[in-house]
Amino acid sequence: MRTRFRHMWPVLAGISAVSLLAACSSSGSSTPSGGSSSSSGGGKSASASPSASVLAGANCSSSATHLTFWAWVPGMSRAVNQFNATHSNICVTLEDPGAGTGEYVPLDNALKAGTGAPDVAEVEFDLLPSYEIQHYLVNLVPYGANNYKSNFASWAWSQVSQGSGVYAMPSDFGPMGFYYNQQVLSKYHITPPTTWAQLAQDATKLHQQNPKAYLIDFPANDPQWLMDMMSQAGAWPFQYSGGANLTINWTGPAQEKFATFWQPLIDSHAVATITDLSTGELTAMDTGTIGAAIYSAWAPSYFAPDVKQSMGQWRASALPQWSAGSSVGADWGGSTYPVFSQSKHPKEAAEFSEWLTATDQSWNIVKTPPSSLFPTYLPTLQSSSFKALAYPISGSSQPNQVFSAGALSIPQTPWPPFMTQVLNQGATTFGAVMTGKETLAQAFAAFQQAEVSYAKSQGFNVST
Image (cartoon, rainbow, N blue to C red; front, side):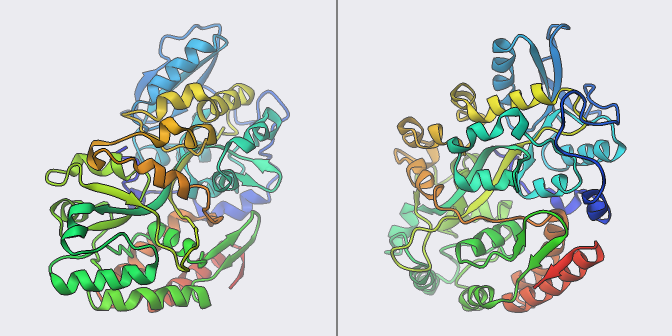
């Protein structure tokens, strides 16, 4: 899905963190007792923006319970139409306001205004806590969400849970691996590395043979990618479980070890420093200037439209490990489908969200192009048919075999409740690493100071 992971957060208005803790301590409840869960009078079909396009559900029966659903996944109308065809008492109207800012800005505005929000919308994992802390989300436990817990990868379920509540249904995600051009690696007599130490040696070896080429890119200015890499190293910098208490740790021993490992490779230019998923990076990969990437399970469908020279040459292998013989994964990207507290029909909205994410009928649709979602839903994730899928960019190989295996060993990564600020601040702070004006360790220290200061200014009790 091409537009799904193009980060649009630098211009995202986001949820106002100034009101985060005030909302957290308010009398509002995210667990409805039935009927309308909001006194705001919401629940009407909302128009996301003047450019929003209605893709499904426009001709539903007036006798059905009508729901509005916002999502940008290509081909999602196929699943919505199937749901409507098999649930005569519920009619879901799908609107696509666009990815990133296209959806989040009007969604944030509607939630703050107390009216006009959809019943269900696509929300990425890392932004979910920002909505949850303000009681904008319905607790789906009363509507049977926990009945599906065993059907999902444990990492994904942990992302949508807070205490005893479940505030969204997980959909797709992006287990990470080593995605490489087999012809480029063969040219430099390199085999896919199984450890990070081996990758460092290979990166140095390749760059010495060809000073204009690199084994991988290290896009430090993408905090989400950087943090996902840190998670596999046991250096996740945030701890948060709801409420006012938050731990921020960018300067501990694990974080320092991570920075110390990568800095020599950055200094020697053994790794490229190009913004990830940019035209520059994708072109360099296609032409062989960059031979591999630490990429996500969505790489085959995402990268393919940019490929002009290397079609069929790309293969997947397991994510390198910090300790030989280990099997620790990481995730990059993914989405959930929460029900919003403005909904007048939370029961029906929950039924739709659960069907969309936790049924074979839905996944048989959205796992295929143009959606090409990578499932958190285990019956699909672990199915032989899904693992056997081939993609033109990867020739006759089956990359899902690798990514599916990595999906089962992802450490828990509790996102902070102001991720938009983290992403915006991080792009600036870590940009200096990309240009060589600051070391990774120095950027970690500066970022620690900035995030602690920001969190305290919002009223959080911060531990470091």
